Length: 135
Image (cartoon, rainbow, N blue to C red):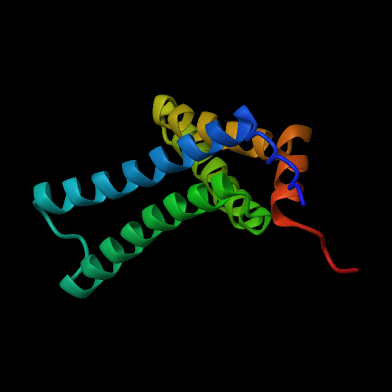
């Protein structure tokens, strides 16, 4: 019995993985940096801990989703899309707040992931890797 050769991973999947990994790493590093350098506390201690844990989890989830997409899990596409849409929405608050450079830094990678997840090459590769669906 001969197995069919595995389909080559499209460039779009590599880019999505890289962007998600970098987004997650940036969130984690920024959170750790802000904890180490923070001066005045706006929240009480419990609120600060909860916020740090939430940010760290968000960073880890972004990295895990990137890894799942890289492995070919089509089920990771929807949560990735939702998080990227939230980042697009968040970017507009930076544009409205007078920091357009930060808005662009949030908007461009999120928009790139949203577009690349739905290119025909990405869609077909994820379908092949995920296997047949039940009707």
